[in-house]
Image (tube, rainbow, N blue to C red):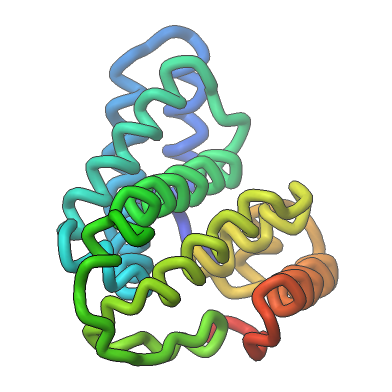
Length: 208
């Protein structure tokens, strides 16, 4: 079963909203944002755990509102062509929201840089989350991680968006993107390899 943008919205409902939005129906934009809200909230909660220094200053709702505002602005001038495209926009906007917050709080002059480092470890693909660390190295690492995803080739970024950010299985990602599961597997392996190479040997693996 394909995991959709929200727990209640299905692909047909989303596509109908996209059609209405193309026709200039502003209520469709609000409906799409409501559909996206629950998915963005889950992503914000999960991703904020990795940005512990940001978490010391910002709540999940702050990240959510930032991402929703970005998505709202995007939908003002871009109509996604499909459910998959909308999901990718949501992933991009949560990613950019976290990067902006990390830059704001990071560095020697940032809020995180002026607090005690307590240590901890976080593994990208293993889902081992740092404890209440405010280690600026971790902040830099996760900022770089999301920026690297932003720079991936489009076909690889699409798979990363759905598997890493939305938590879809490889089979569901394939169905959502309309490509074969084997293609998704190949792209996901390449995503893991590129991130592994760029981030200095963090062990790659398949998202559970």
